[in-house]
Amino acid sequence: MVRSVGAFLALFTAVFTLMVGVGLLGTFLSLRTVIDGFATQITGLIMACYFLGMSLGHLVGPRLVLRVGHIRAYTAFAATGAVAALSHGLVSNPFTWAVLRFASGIAMFGLYMVIESWLNECAEPEFRGRVFSIYMTLSYFGMACGQLLLNMGDVHNGQLFIVSGILFALCLIPVSVTRSVSPTLPSVLRFNLLELIRQAPIGMTGCFTAGMINSAFYAMGPVFCSRIELTVSQTSWFMMATILGGLLLQWPMGAISDRYDRPFVLSILGAALACMSIVIQATHTLSFVLLLPLMALYGGLNFAIYPVSVARAHDLFGTDEIVSVSSALIFCYGLGACIGPVAASSVMAAIDRPDGLFSFITAVAALFAGLVYFLRTKEKVTIVTAEDQASFMPMKNTSP
Image (cartoon, rainbow, N blue to C red; front, side, top):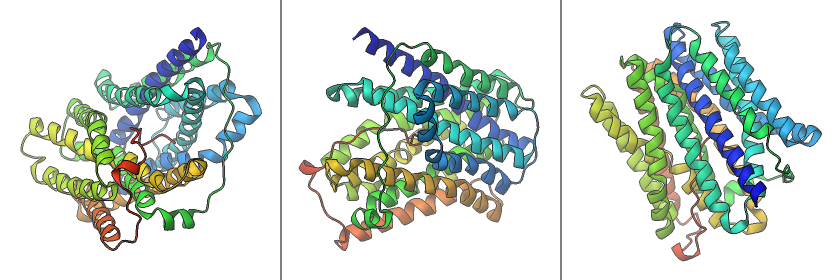
């Protein structure tokens, strides 16, 4: 029991430290692309490489863990993340930064995989939901705190790259010194994506849509702030309000999705997110004080689409299919995440306005809401009563 508590403390400490570094690096790098004069579409491509690396991480992560074990693999991934973060400060070059973001994505997939499999094995089944809720809360809170670290240094030099590299290195310590037994790596099952899309079109489409919207916001949100001439401090609060809104509103959104028909809830979420994006476009120049609560509401709606879509998909499958269905949902999310920054930056460049980001999000969310409503009303999906639905589980959107 003592060792289990020690393992949880080590992993939770590592998660929080890691996510502070991730939150800082992502926002700071996006800001630096603007400061260094990169074109908006180039920024989108650079930031998309991170999500491409996460999507392809499954080709590297499990193999490395099987060869050297969880702790050594975790060490290698964290060291890679630290080296990539520090290397950003050595040269300001779009191609180099794209390669470094790709390497960071692979490293982050490996770190998430090790941490989550470890938590899964340490937690007893009856406590697993609460353990992962703590994990999700610490992840969101860590990313939010990372935004405030933008105020620690001058964004025009590489000091904050060093800070993020230090945080990646620090997350090594709790896991490296733990005495907990390493978990076994679950086998990865193959899945037929087209067949799963046919059986659960709303869940798969929801994960793809969440990937597009979330990655577009994380990648281009700081660019939006810079283009509308927010200060660095204001940008940090802008990002922090959105992330904390996503955390605080997941529980009520989950309770609603457990009580009512999930396709209907998803269509309402998509429509509400489209409306909120329109409101932000119309009011972002009026008052920064007004913008913060609007972004918190936006975050709550935005970050709820992925977990509700996952729950919807699992409503339709048995427990023996959970692993393959989860793999397909992750793949759909990753595919959307690779497209989001490129598409959003292209819209911003095409209309030559910073709020093109929210124009993109409005269009994607509205199309998603319409598609879900169409599928539901035309009875092309299975309607599951609220009593028979799977339980909602709050979760981080960026975790594999």
